[in-house]
Amino acid sequence: ISLPGGSPSQTPAFYQALLKSRVLFAEIARDSLEVDGRLASFLDFFEITGETEKVRIEEAVDILGGIVGTPNPPRNTQLVSVTAATEWPEVSLFIVSALVEALNRYNMSVVQGQAGAERRFVEGRLALASTRLRAAEDDLESFLRNNRQFDRSPELSFQRERLERSIGLRQGVFTSLTQMFEDVRIREVRDIPVISM
Image (cartoon, rainbow, N blue to C red; front, side, top):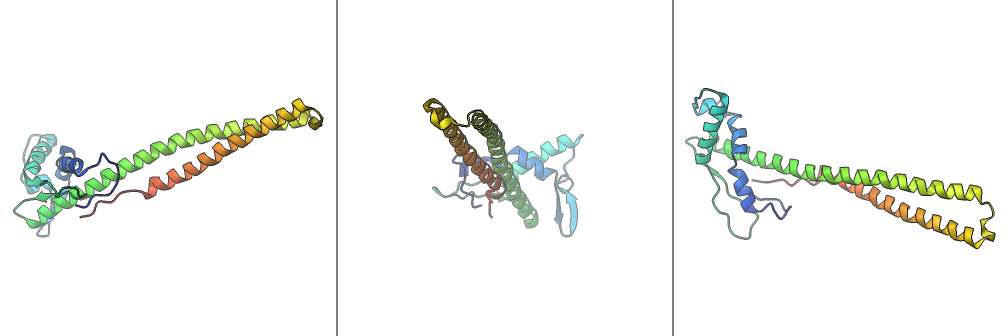
């Protein structure tokens, strides 16, 4: 499996551990597979018995732990090896393919979750910046309405300049946050790393 470039914490060792995780194995145990044109649940195909579904899934997870292997990949690469050894080549392929699909779903949820959290944060800051910009504009409007001939007074000219600087500063923050918000919204959809087999 060729891993995507992404978070420094998501190393080949991280993906090796994830490929052997009980969570992913439980997903496979709940799935159905097709062998020789016959569709069967994983539990039924491997003839796993138990008093409850939960017990059967736990046994299937243990079986998958013996079937799936993650040999150490070459050093300094973004590769992870995963094997599945069963009597049936199509079942082995099903297991490996299901693991790769599960890794892609995991990456999608993590990346979209991070981008979603960032989008919500920027959205909140943008709303606040918009409110502050509007307040600064209202202050200048009120000043101009009450002081029609401010250019004859140094104090009033200074106050007007201060209000205009405040608007300029708040306008800059608002523009920057608007750009960030659009970037995050695009990244939330676009930058989903794909794992290839």
